[in-house]
Image (cartoon, rainbow, N blue to C red):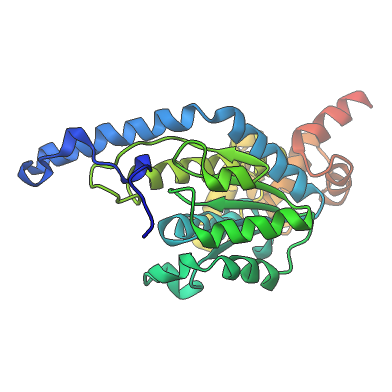
Length: 302
């Protein structure tokens, strides 16, 4: 029988031993307090998170992918972060991948036994044909999920860059991965329910890795999503507003630039700021590796 008693995520929280007697307000207060502790725990791991951001950006620039691997809540959080990257940053659907134990159905219906299959973690990575250019991130609150351990072991053998996100210190998964990110969130309000604090901490770290990597990859100018895809009316309006904000121009000017740029927010901004036609602005962007700020600096030098 597996002994979970040593895991901090499985221990009882002394502040909520009488949780079943709490009022609704007391429950909300207790959970809010513990959520703030999750934020603090992540704060202690920022040097490691920064390393993960740099690794992810380097892999993307080399044509590799960010691949999240997890089970249960951890796996769902990885899938969530992955599916939100294409519309937010304009990357291809396969640039950020989320794999969850039990397959896609496990996202909406719990497949609890799937996490115990270490070989399946390897099989799922084989299924998407990972290479040494990819960055594999294992997600497991307990730090010991076999599905994740098996996947990361295989990824290391291939020479992939690897990181592990766990919510216990000196985790088993952290020993396998090249980089261990371990926000120690402690006992949950509801004993063992790691979808709570531990899930919050993992989501915060994933936010940082994907947003940071995309920023370093030129998907952001100032604090604007300049590669956002215009897939609905709201995003069409957002695209125009982004151009207006970045260029301090009238909406009509932004709309005209977007039309000339075939809807590319980044190209429209570059065209306006460099005062160049879209085709010439595109060349400037290519020369700068897709970074608007670098394109502007290069223009100043010449």
